[in-house]
Image 1: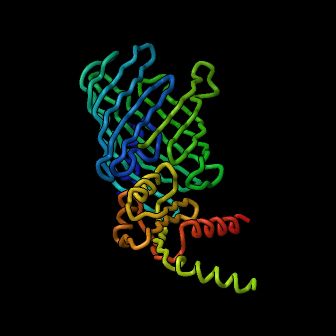
Image 2: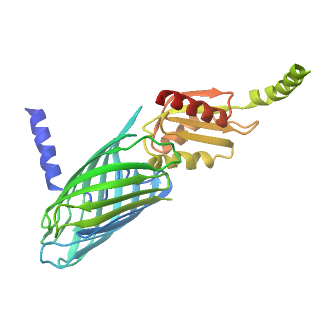
Image 3: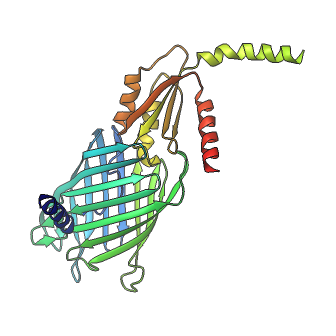
Amino acid sequence: MLKQRTVALGAILLGQIALPLHAAALMGFEDSAMLMTEIGRYNQEWMLNYSPALGHAIGVEQMRMSGKGEQATTISGINYTGLIKRWNMPAAQANVWFNGSVGEARGQYDGFAYTPSLQFDVESTRLYFLAKARMIRAPNMNYDTAAVQAGFSFYETGFHQTQPWFVIEAKTMRNNDPGLQITPALRLINKNYFLEFGVTNPWQGEGFAPRLNAMFVF
Amino acid sequence: MKKLLVTLMLSALTPAAFAVTTIKAEVNGMVCAFCAKGIEKKLNALPQKQAAFVDLKSRVVALQLKDGQDVSNEAFSKVIQDAGYSVGKLERVNQTVDAIQAEVAEAEKAGGK
């Protein structure tokens, strides 16, 4: 009974909230900086963070989104990323992350904005799964999102080679149009960069939209 | 005459080969090059480093030390841990990083057949 309640609570939480950025790693290694960006028709986001110690990163973030018939709202804020738990297994790694910003919303909605989120991901050299949830709130504004991703790599590669992946994401965002965004994407991972080219809702004429995600670590 | 020449060459090479010390470890959780870049960066920053090698398929990380220099097993493990991973098996071998790299490549080639 307790287990069922826990699962139900987890499902509700994931149903409420999500992280627009898409990588398994939300920060680099100790004493590194990471730049992440998402450029799509429905949402745009970038974040730059610095990790002073393993498991913690601070930075700045800006995200832009809009609902149907609304003007866009831009949130600019200070961001914190924390690694809650990591499991290093012989052939896989799993993580639970907290990420969130506090800042100011401007546009359709104005005022204090906050965006706490949770992410779980598990990855091997061939398979990948991620579930994420994020509250995106400001006065009278609710763009809470939830997303799941799954993917596979076409083949294993060496440390200095580029590894191609196929990844598909299902994402919902409250008060956003379209409410459900399905994005199949080709992901290229190299030791110097992470690039993802996707098309959101490719079967919808009007909803069809290319999307680019990129990450760089310094 | 040929045998003598080979013997002389081998005897000249052998002491150098035995002088090589490389720390070789199996690393848990190392599944993506982008995420494991920190390991390479931290190993490259070590002044004792002669050469380093990271391989995702075999999960091997190797650090060849400069002559007369040392990094303790604990210090090496900390480098891996600070990059976000954990060390499984760790050993010191008298092989160069190039030799380990060739060995790993050979094993992967054989495994892929």
